[in-house]
Image 1 (cartoon, rainbow, N blue to C red):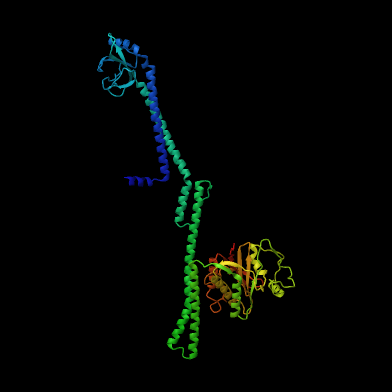
Image 2: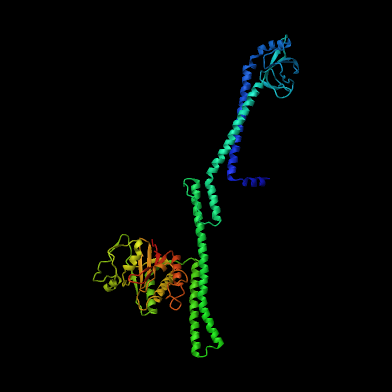
Amino acid sequence: MHEQLTEWWNGISLRGKITGVTVMLLTLGLLVAGVGTMSFLRSYLLNQVYTSNLAVYASGAADTVADTCRAGVKKVPPKYYFAVIDQNAGVICSAGPENAVPPVISSTTLPKVIHTGVAFTLSDRRGANHWEAVGFPVVNSTGSAQNALIVGYNLGENEQIIGQFALIFLFFALTVVVLGGALTRLLVTSTFAPLREVEQTAARFAAGDFSQRLERAPRNTEVGRLNESLNTMLSRIDSAFADRLKTVEQMRRFVGDASHELRTPLVSVRGYAELYRMGALSTPEEVAQAMERIEKEAIRMGELVQDLLELARIDEAKPLNLTAVDLVPLANDAALDAMASAPDRTVRVIVTEPIVAERIVDLATPVAAAPSPRTGSVATRSMALAGATLARLTIRRPRVAKALATQVVVMDDPNPPSATVRAEENKIRQVITNLMGNAIRFTPAGSPIEIGIQVDEPGDSAYLSVIDHGQGIPPQIREKIFQRFWRADSSRNRDTGGSGLGLAIVASIVASHGGTVDVVPTRGGGATFRVRLPLLHTS
């Protein structure tokens, strides 16, 4: 039974519950007020009857009234009833109004003591007509009180007043209950209108329309705070779904691109193997050439698989082993490695003066004739600053890109300033290696490459730039080159280019360190890949 009631109550809407509870409280309150008012009114009328009518028959007049009753006088004042009873409650004589049903007087209807003058109520035989009565002792000729006089007053008029009051009160009570219920329903409906909007918006969102949002409401209201919280939740859900779809799409494209990249070398390997099996490779030179091609394709597949494994490890988002890493020694090591693998190139490490707040750098000012301990030779610095035509540049955080691309200083100092970041050293080395390999692969032979380092103190960042002087990258594809398996142009094919994963690995590693990577044009031609990493806080 309790479970059924609970289920029934839970099945009622919130508006119905509030309206029902309000109507119930109104009804209960009016019922208590009505019963209390009628009880008070009845007591008041009875008290008026006693004090204004029955009290006139004081104990001193009881004998006269009794003698009149025994004499047989039947005519009595209206609404009054008189009766003389003996000690056994037997009626000796009585007198009352004509056409009136007298009260029932017996030992069961009378109180045990009736000589105290305390009022009591009697009923007629039908139980409909009530009399308010008092009793007085009657003194006989011997001076002893053997009998009693009962004086009653008809309460029909009082009961009629109470009945009319009850009808009037009932009418107004019902009116109040109906109007209260209607107003409560209207108020609840208007108040819950924003909640219905929430319900409808949630339903449309659940149906697949993830653009649904709730209208803004004042934040000092419950509905306003609810709408704001729900909008935040819906935005996060929408973003999560979008990220999920994007991830699924990237995974599909990634699998398709990986399959495509692996298919070409596999086809080549299989083709040469079939030629060898069929005896088409008859001479040792042809066999050697086929083995060489098989080896190159195997190397390409190995590199591709290694890159795929590296991207998979990065995607797993495993915790990094973060330590203090100085970018300058890493840049020096990368420069030495690049010159060892490409002896025809000049690779320089360039450390730009640190950016400090409100520092002005005049790029058009001629360079002094004497070298400084930190700037190296005049010729080297002049060559680095060639082509700078800006009159004055306030180096702030939004202008870092131009500052890095123009104002450079060659570090010949054996103890250069540090650019220490919080990172995993092997990962940062891989970033520099990939960027350097990209610069060597896609720029003309013999063209110089610079590795730039700069500290942005107001921006709390360190910048590492790999600057080449090749054909550059068109603006419309600068955002795409960091996508997996994407190649910038036709010159970056499988013969001269890589698999299209090098820059994707760079972007993933930098993002896992909380940094960013982008590409800007090099002054005078070429591309500058710029990596921003958060500085290490030593304090």
